[in-house]
Image (cartoon, rainbow over all chains, first blue to last red):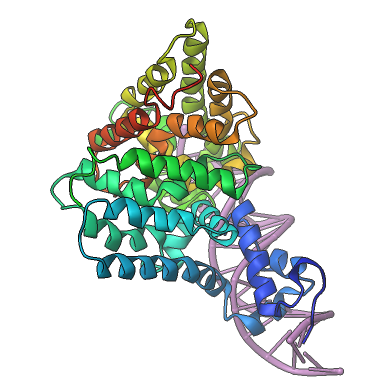
Length: 193
Length: 193
DNA sequence: GTCTATATAGAGATAGAC
DNA sequence: GTCTATCTCTATATAGAC
């Protein structure tokens, strides 16, 4: 067991690989990052990666699972609430305020590698797919603009992280995402919940 | 001169290549699309592409130039206006309402290939870089949250197009982007212009 | 302008020693 | 668990005929 020192102290090799892959995928894209790049980052050769993962796509799949699970949990929570005015805003703020550095990084990853993700992890692990359930709880199918508004509310953190400058910190992004949620769920506009 | 029929009637070979590349890059990503893929789409072999473009990256560069030019024009327009209340909203709506199918497709392209774009077209042709000038006109450097708010206002069309479902049409996306601009530039929040 | 054929490089992945 | 060595495939790009 190769215990590491530095920022990754206490991490298993597998975790170190995932962390390095996440960072490289975000910067250079999925196809722009080779197995050798990832291996070099954690001080291994590319062959060693195949002991921990069956292939490159399974590294991507492992990375995209976490946030999808969080989204599903949020959807279950919302479903368990009884319908009431302001529930949309409440649910969205729950998502925004619970944002962590990891989720921010996961968000950026998802944006950087969207086509590769669609190719390698067909649908169930994708973020747009994850929002589907939530959106369905708060709007009907017949008003596309309102439907898109709801999608924007839940995607507020993603929009803010995409529009942010590289040196904006997490708190700034959360604050801007809150602004966005509040602005888009003014009592007047919030017709369906 | 190989005049074509069908949807690309009247287009030069060069234009047909660009159109095919844009579509494929958006769907499969930059690295996920080979020169052979593009060539096949327009009924050529990959070698023929090198008569029209010096290399794959120059196809990408040509694709990303158009929208950057539009953004620069908008920035010049805003700069020529005298400062007045509501100018931010006015400028952003100008951008949103002028959206065309082409710009929507360009937006989707930019989102699909962000890392490849950063790699191949260093900075000046990138969209985030294009917003920089505009953002500077409407906010100071010392309030990061307000700065990000302004960025979101100008990125409203991009956010809406990203959050949209694949079958949402242009009008739906424009309408949602307008909602976003209006919500984020309420007279109360619009402190700097 | 477009073709066929090919040079060259790099990718993901596997075999087998240690 | 990790290494070295290598297989195989596919990519971009070029050379030269037509």
